[in-house]
Amino acid sequence: NPNHEPALTTLGNLYVEQKRYQEAVEVLSKVVSLNEKNPLRHENRRLEGVYYWLGFVYLALDQPQEAVGALKEALAIDRADADAYYLLGNAHLRSGSYPEAVAAYRQAVRFVFDFQEAYQGLAQAYDKIGDGARAGYARGMVAFTSRNYDAAIGDLQRATQALPDFADAFFGLGLAYERKGLKDKAIENYEATLRLDANHFLAGIRLQ
Image 1: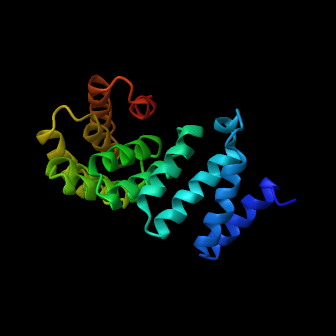
Image 2: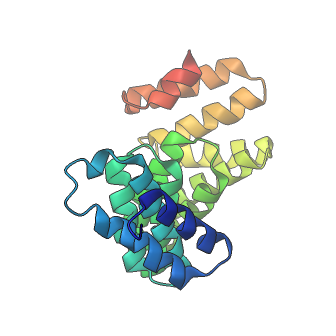
């Protein structure tokens, strides 16, 4: 059966593991074509994985625009896939779309607050658009994810001073204080985060 979707998907994943990227594109693209007229395509979790790996492969082949298209399709199926947002950020960064890269990386860390690689990409994207204060915040979060909490607190304090309306910096500072065992200061910064962004659900969880 040349249209056996589970077999095609598994074969495509094997090609990815073997770094046979062009062959992976051919096989995974066939799964996409088989679902073009599927009215339930945006509820198909297998298809979400196919789009994700297509995005990964396109990046490996240095085709960032194609990666952007595939990853947006993956996120249309699963809007909470932090890894897909991270790859989307990489694709935008590679193609020079720096504000879009920032937006994608920020979504990734909204779902996974200790996503070190996403913060590294975020720092690069902020540097590219000339936003030194937010780049400092991102580097502070890299320090946090490296368990260098004193350095993180220093960077994040500077970020909150430079950006008093930037909720993410206060959230990061709260995390660093919490890891240091300074709970009163952590609470203070989580509350500041929620005053600036009432929908910051991770700050609400950490505050509880």
